[in-house]
Amino acid sequence: MLLMALPMVGTAQDSLGIFKSEGPLEVTISTDLRKLINEKANETVGTAVFTIKLPDSVTYSSPVTIKARGHFRKEYCMIPPVNIGFRDAKYPLNKMRTLRLVNACRTGSSYEQLVFKEYLSYNFLNLLTPKSLNVRLVHVTFIDSLNKRKPFKYHGFVIEDMDAMAKRNDCKEVKRERLHTELTNRDYMTLVAMFEYMIGNTDWSVPAVHNIHFMAPKDSLTDRPYAVPYDFDYSGIVNAPYAQPDEQLGTTKITERVYRGYARRFEELSEKAALFNARKGAMYKLVNDCAWLEKNTKADMIDYLEEFFKTINDPQGLKQVFIDNARQD
Image 1: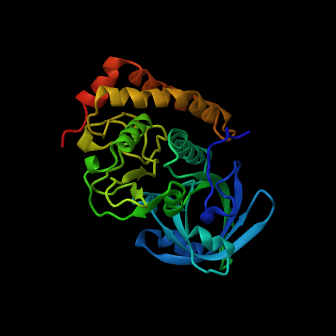
Image 2: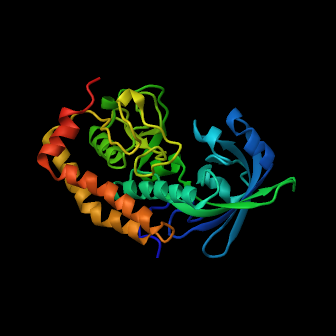
Image 3: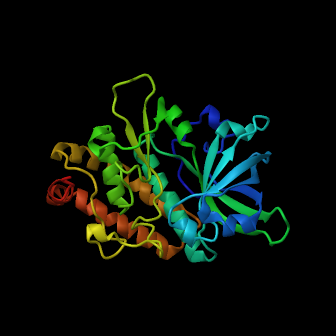
């Protein structure tokens, strides 16, 4: 058993059930690998054939567009994360519109461990709120459509389309160029900022729209939007070898936590701390039940999470981190 059951609610855009159950799916991407590998940093959009085999053994294939993403990983990784676009209405996969695929950055077991740790970070947020992106593990095989390279296989995961996530939360995705953090939904932003602190991630910004999506209730013109986080590979809990501490924050190692949210009333923080505590056992179970995580990786993740829980269960620590050392600007 890989994971405990998570509350994944389907939408019309997930009519194939990609995010409705557990366990890895088999995925194949056939494309010009030389172009994908050599031109990945140039914002080049290529074409591919995307094939996925579902648990009921039904296989779907569709022509897609494929584009590398991730500012740093486009330069560093052999195959960086990619956006997969479904365009042809003749194919059932088209209902998903887009999928984001994250796979091991390079070959080797240590890089595969990074994938599983980032995958579990999404799962942690799923446990805390349905207003979060679902993920599904995949075994992805890259095939050279020109037959000039041998196929190779990576572990990875696919990320739910933001529009689909918004719809299952009775919201709509909204595009914003700039928005002050405190002009988003306050309760949700408190949860997100504490979550990012839990996993040790400082690589996000609401005003810069960096690793943040926005959505708002679809029938409201006045409700403040939700700032939905994604991309956690620079977090301390993942601890990727390519991640560098932020000099502007004065950190010396990527595992060093810094709270990037604004101050909240102690009562607000206590309420969210209670939620995290209620989900603590489930989070630890996700880690311990992950069949692909090595024993030492599990221990490191649990130790890292335990530091967070010690902080939020100490009234003085809660005040010091989330009030006294909160953002001022």
